[in-house]
Image (tube, rainbow, N blue to C red; front, side, top):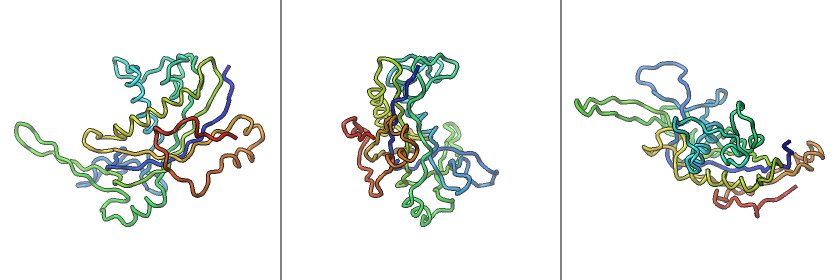
Length: 253
């Protein structure tokens, strides 16, 4: 039986170094409009980064690194206790979960105040985004087939929250498996987030504050104790790169 040990709270930012496109659905068809809009918050209409998109790309990169990609291209799911992919990112409910519950939870990432102010002053015909035009040329006739995509502009920053849960399941140490989270973040910085990465879209940079570890005793003392222990300083500095997210810098409560 899995015994809960604690949570590692990770807070940081995602900075767009190039335009970012994570596709959403079109509300209506428009002649001359955007062919592929970005995903937006239905209340504010502001673009955001879904946690599922970020976690899915991190998982895929780790699958390739560890040789877990299946021949048919499906999502890896062996649920073995020593499998870093299944242990960190979760396994199918149809499998016997010998690795225990999913360790990493990734929240939706919303723009910070500075980015919202940037979008408000942006010279663009689109709401909080830019329009990127592309052309596909027919190799025989040279006929152009234009399309228009919506992108989050370079320099936009999104607040990132992740929780890495630590369990005592077997002889394998969950804290050591956190190294795979760090590795997948490094791989993502050198790859791309969202669509059209091979054409220059979606290059991002991660910066983190000092992570905080809350042991199970903090939760046993009650919610007030957890809220107090999990307070982040107002002057938090996002200066830690994925490579420097190391165990020695963690504070415990």
